[in-house]
Image (cartoon, rainbow over all chains, first blue to last red; front, side, top):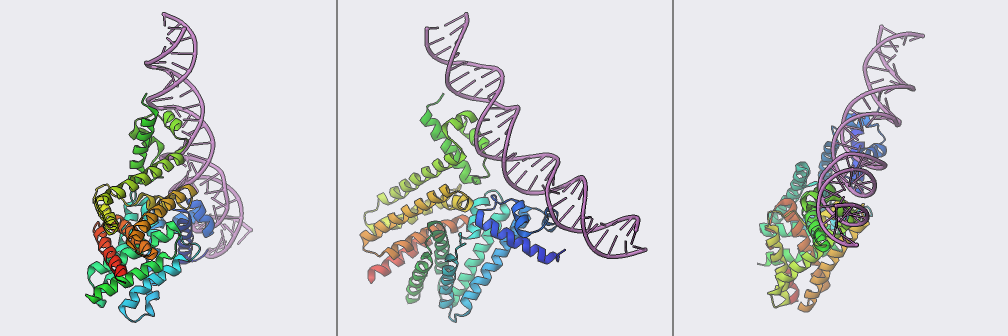
Length: 187
Length: 187
DNA sequence: TCTCATCGAGAACGATCGTTCTCTTCTTTT
DNA sequence: AAAAGAAGAGAACGATCGTTCTCGATGAGA
């Protein structure tokens, strides 16, 4: 038998891909088991329930997102460049052919009303992102409103790219962010 | 027995409220029947299937959205004011206590991957909105990119208000729109 | 080699859901 | 008043899903 930690990670990877690609309720635990290559019994010994597995998947997405954003902005030196790097990161993401929108927005839309846990995790992730943006904007000498606006642009780009299938939303949002930053710094 | 048109409208109203409030897959046809006050048999004589009912619900939301946006901008005279009225409309919507995000974004997140019909309706609605914004921006003498940016702001405000529970996203988006419009018209 | 604990494969269970069917109750028509 | 057709209430059906249970195989320890 495989190591327990490794098996958990394998299940989370499989569930993440399936949930993201098809939606959560559309994916049965049998499908997760098949893709993860594990027995149902072991699956339920590793995770108490589908809800618990979903929570782990979403929490994993939070750290992935954070790593992605930080990595994208790591090459930039100024706060302004770090902020704009967020939209470059989005651009790369939107162009992946398995892109299907923000997993948190999707999960919230599907289960937010019915599962307080899912709603809470989505809310936490969005607030954490807003705080990250706000910290960079503060370094840059901008206002909290500017920070909120830059976050709104990022959110809008994600849903636009997902539903309308327009990855250009990323650099359109980036261009808007440049204008907003310039406008506020001029004042 | 009630008139057929009236009965259809009643069912659509009930299903709309339930789907929006709890999510689509979380609502059974029994719940729709109970709220609509109709027999299951009649329900299925009025609508071929749950999918057909959902399509009607979403199409109804499209006309409601269009009416709401047009009504909000009807008092405005300039294209600029009409554009900004969109965000005022969003503000009023976000403050309703039954607000739970954009029904199209939610439906897309829940069923977009599994139901081409739902994905198509959501896509149509978003594109129609983008075209509406683009027509106003054109009147105003702005570029297509500005139009896309204003639409992205509206989308972002909706998901931010829904998930983070911050209705202020509406006027933050509005303020950003003002800056973007002013910036482009100055050039 | 025998025993015993463990684990995988998948059958089974109970619940739910979309949809249809049955049966009974009206209403209407002649 | 009798016959017939429609319509409501809800039981029933078949499928699916989350979760648990059974059973047979496997491997370690004495």
